[in-house]
Amino acid sequence: MDMSFVMDYTKCLTAHCGRIILGKEETIRQVIVTFLAGGHVLLEDLPGTGKTMLLRAFAAGIGGDFRRIQFTPDLMPSDLTGINFYNQKESTFEFRKGPLFANIVLADEINRATPRTQSALLESMEEKQITVDGQTWPLEKPFMVMATQNPIESYGTFPLPEAQVDRFFMRLSMGYMKREQEMQVLCRPATGELLKALSPVISQEETDAVQAMCRQVKVSDEVLSYIMDLVEYTRRDDSLPAGVSTRGALCLYQASQITAAMEGRDYVLPEDVKREALAVLGHRLFSDMDAAEKYVEKMLDKVAVPLEKV
Image 1 (cartoon, rainbow, N blue to C red):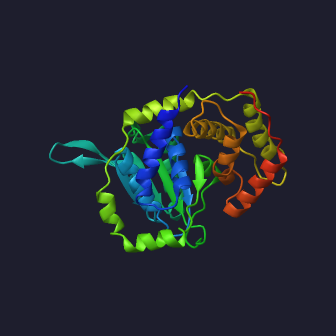
Image 2 (image 1 turned 180 degrees about the vertical axis):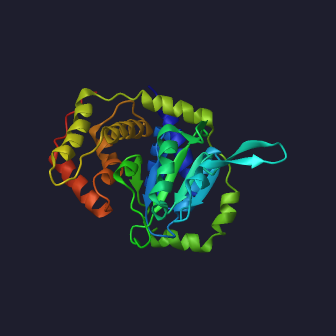
Image 3 (image 1 turned 60 degrees about the vertical axis):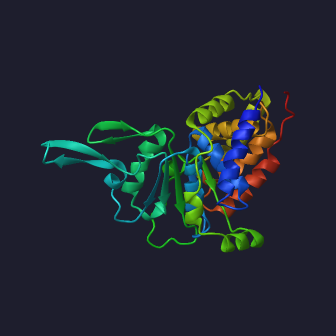
């Protein structure tokens, strides 16, 4: 199968976002992987590193509707989903949609909202729908949530429970730019002006086609066994409260397929699995990113890599 279309799709969207976010091609690539898998991103980083700008640029690139929600302790579930209000003129109740009715949703500082409000995201993330007063409403297609949280500030926050963390396809961190790249940002026009100049570079039809091609990427029995070896390694480790879930194993499988397609291959190599292991599995094991990175590195060293038969 010719995967050149997937490669062109990835390069086009990466270059588009790279006009706003400099030097973060790998982070952009992983956001695209998550998007193609129909998943969601937990972005854990310091303030002011470009998290919002990345998602705004990405939404502009796919021609999608973007909404940013600032999570605070007084935020209510209905502030996300919407409400039924009484229209006195018509003498009927009408549903007023909330900000979740968008293609790309930024849940900024998600851990500042109460668990009750955090849980309002669960149905939308997992089922791509919300329920208000017993009525179910489908969400827009495509739909992706990127939630952010500050790793160094815990005052007045509500840590995400394991069940909610597991619903995120990946956890990413952008970090600071290199000196030369940051100097370019300082000298260029305001980011808001650059965002206004952006226009869609891919269509929903192209996204659907790429997603279909990625699902057809072959995973040999040897590589499938390698994925399960990594997952079972975490489950046998008594030092962990819980190992990787079946959902986590499925996410690693999908991420490996998409990564292989982005490299122009219609088959997965063990290197594809290793490349995505930290971003996909790390947050399912440790809340601390450094601890997760050390553990995943040790796990990849200890679990034998198969000789793949293509």
